[in-house]
Length: 317
Image: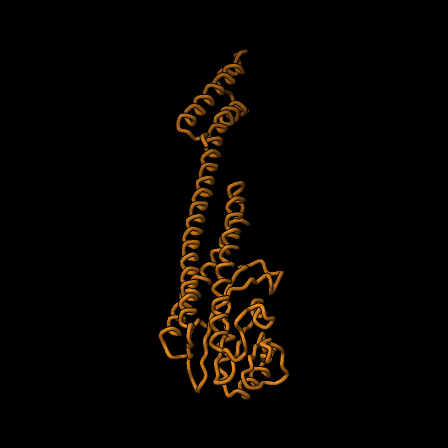
């Protein structure tokens, strides 16, 4: 979808039908026809758009032919896109920010919800001609989105831990594994975004106006904080999964040990019964108290073997 926005004289951002001077062009899940139209109209390298839509593209910055491409990663909830997907819920997706001399272009393979806040006037100090300030605002909102997603992931980890403490089920373990994969996506994206922000701050890719460097510093601090929190959560989650994995393995070993002990104990009366159940001459078969001798011997040997396993703590929890 192709959206064109333009600031009015009153400072409001409104939809426009054509690309004019100082327009903000937003492409969400664009078609090839829409990409070709914008690239041809604004004379922007087409591969800038293709790279921004590549799910494997890493955060970076590039300047070519008078245009600057900034690729960032934004977090998003896959259930918002496909409610039937129960795999890894939280992931990151590339988003391209392209600066030309007179235009700002944003492009993403999904419709990112927070982008509508810019066009609805919810983000202050935003106008379509303020390319640098809009870019910094997008980076700032992205950093806050990471922190918000991390808070949600922390809550889901706590819930999964509570369920695991009650019952060791595969569902909770898979939940933790999927959340761990989400953290891997985020920590990788945040690490590369830090380097990209440092390039913007110390390079000459885009023009930074007064106070812009301070805003970019604040954004970089937020990204570093999000990165550190993600690393801590990932390390904690790995420890939790290792701990529960060891607990489950210990429980399995304990059950197997108990079953082995019970099997040996029950094999004693079964062996004696099978011997005296054979249709051949056996000792004491003519003795009127033979049955009680067999029962007594069985109870004695069974009790003795049970006592041995008890002393070896085969029945302890």
